Image (cartoon, rainbow, N blue to C red; front, side, top):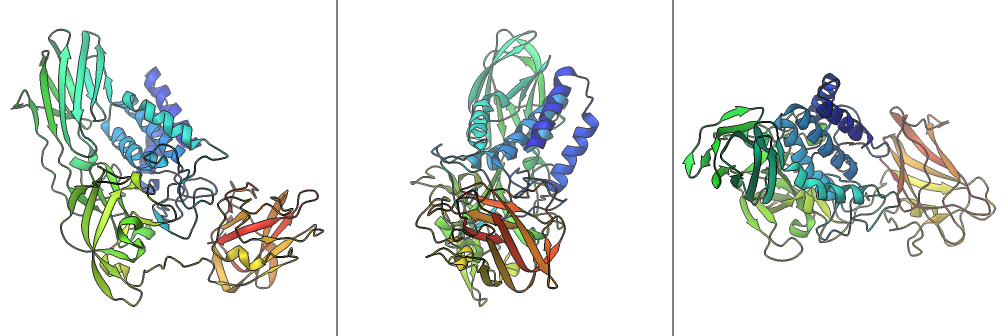
Length: 537
């Protein structure tokens, strides 16, 4: 998120000054992001804990962080890049991030929020600071006001102008007055974009004026990929040239930096029509993103779609099959009038048996509006890759854990509770099972022993309060390898945090294989410590 805001400032300085001192750096950064480090939803910051980009092509689905604030920053950054360059490809990225990752940050009612935006949910693993769904608010509440202000700023993203050009940069029903140097021009746009691709524009200059009307022709329509960069190519592509009509007659245009430019003398009441067909697309992924090998995403126009449990049951059991897609709309319920896609599929059980299934897909931004703790997937596996991928809804994490030992345990608490898959909604939830240290234990320890040595990519702790327990003053972790205990060296941006109501995540600085993990805690004065859940990946 902070990187995106820095890039935004650099791009805006270039745009405002015209000096372009940052061009070389910004273009290198942008090309690297869209080619190696951006999720198909426009999300940035794939690695939780450090809220960072991670390595090239490190784009996990279930553990993706993709903070809402970072998506908002991605919109700002690309808007600045467009204003500095006049190139529509930046708007194509801004649009994908706006309509997918950023908009997913707030529910349809506008009163619950996502901090984290994964591309898969399994109904077991908690995200959004330990919650399995949307939150009413966050202790660090940067995302709710950020998505709110971006929505209020969206009208400013729809038009731009130069000395002799008006740019339509984002489509949707709207009105604007464009102050061209030679005179003002009123613009009225009627469109159901991004759900439909028909756009009708009425121009009313104060007097007849000659200027260029620039209509953005998105990458998702013209190119062989969903958005700029090579990460997300279409599985087949047959886009036809765009047709533009002025007052009912086909008009000539030239293409310039992703815009179809219609140059003429415009009169009050001139009407322009643009049609951007929106077929359902199957999208592949660069094979260097290992998690998406053998998987396909579904898009339509600039929207990414996902399968959710409310329509399909446990979605990890599903696989795509060949066949045509059908586009409809929800007639009732929280998603009323929103589009839905029906596509052929199979339900594949753990024993390999197959049952035909019609998979229902919804816009990604609209998921988790009907229930929490449900399964969801953006990248659906193809039939040949899906056998044996069934994930029972009642599955609990930690199956490789042999036992949990503690230096002490308060009456009524059990160390085994820290890996039972039951995470409290809040740290002070009295109904959630947890482990608590005994009063007087000034150096409580929790030891997690594995059935066999395992590679560790992250360790997360959800602290418990109540019954005299409080989050610790400090904590550290050790790893036992070949019988020797050593401190767990953390990734450079990580630290041992003690926040309540969420998982506190740390990552090893380098690959590490452990026979056991040990969590050492320092209680606050006259307090004990408690843990609701430990998550190890």
